[in-house]
Image (cartoon, rainbow, N blue to C red; front, side, top):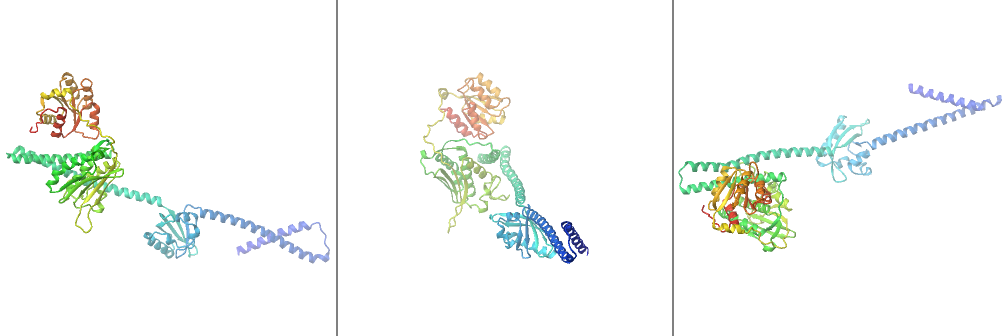
Length: 580
């Protein structure tokens, strides 16, 4: 009733306004009594005409307002940051905005009347179906996360909110692109899993290290105690000494691997390029491991297809040696019967080295992880093989430093029971155009004079045990031995004894280190032979020793044979005393 009264009031006001306008037009005109009826009729018509004109103007203004409001609504709808969809009960798309079009990666014309489920990844389609069913059943707002397969063949993650329209026949849906958020979540999950895996690997590694270090230490300390307390036959003594020696070598190998991997991870290892005869490298490794292979009744062989002049390249000799040594050592360790073969082929601009064995091979899932630090084919405590699981990680790092790649392939042949695997790695073939002459130091006139007498040797060492060991190692060479504990004392003794033939210089010394002491000695004595010896044994120590003025370098623990051969190279006519 209120609405009807409002309409009547509005019509009355329009009529009053129309009559007033009409009276203004005719206020000066005169009419006769006979024309009054006609004039009334004309008056009514004119009033209605004016009413219609005024109504038309109002309708025009109302239409303009409606069009402006609709335009604003369309702009808000189309350019909203979220995607908007209108779906039927069956999931058919009735309408959508530009944001939804962009999220789905297709033009609106291809999306209208298509089914929204077509764009949903199979693994979340069941989630979507339940989402749509609940909306029309419960008439409540529902939320879910879906994966969309977009027009760019990529996956997008969307947060979906849906609610029933007022009519109850349509579902109004909003889409929010959460792809970046999901990526961050997945990255965090992977990082967490990686951290947990690293923690597990470190725990496994520490348990393994404890075993690997304590086992040889048990052999060293245990058999040392037996040598001290028991009256043993000569054969038993030699057997125990051999066990102690092998246990010490095993522990040294583990320590070297730990130092190497630590230096690699802290990026403190540099590549030192020099002329390298790869045939000579392989032959040395072959002879080095031949006895160990023969003890296991394995056939070890090498293939060196190139002549010497073609096999000399520029690379890091020590790293190449370390890579090949690690691979051959592994091959012998894991091969119980059959053979081990090492060799190389020239393939374009690269040498491809290989180490092949007839061992058990490597499972497919292990081919990548065996190159990771602290990883082994078996990480269980009941595995049959010793080792820290660092050799292949070190090898991979060295190969990468040299500009190559490393991989492993199982070498099982079809229709046979043959097994085993082959490790391949490449390094750039940087040939040396002209071979240099042998640059080994030739004894000078002064050293020739020493051929007929014993040497006067200065031992610079602050550790008493190391000092005693050096004295025993050089027995037979010595005429007189001088001993000091600091770099300052070494410089002073050399200044007062110009006839010293050889200085065995420790690097880590109190007051003045070995490098500085060597430089000081060279200021007044250019002839004395100085051999540096250090327990650091890091890459670059040899170069530092030579740069300081030393003649050569040897790392601790010192190999007696290597030290004596080194001294013999400088004082060549002196006896070897191999039985000392």
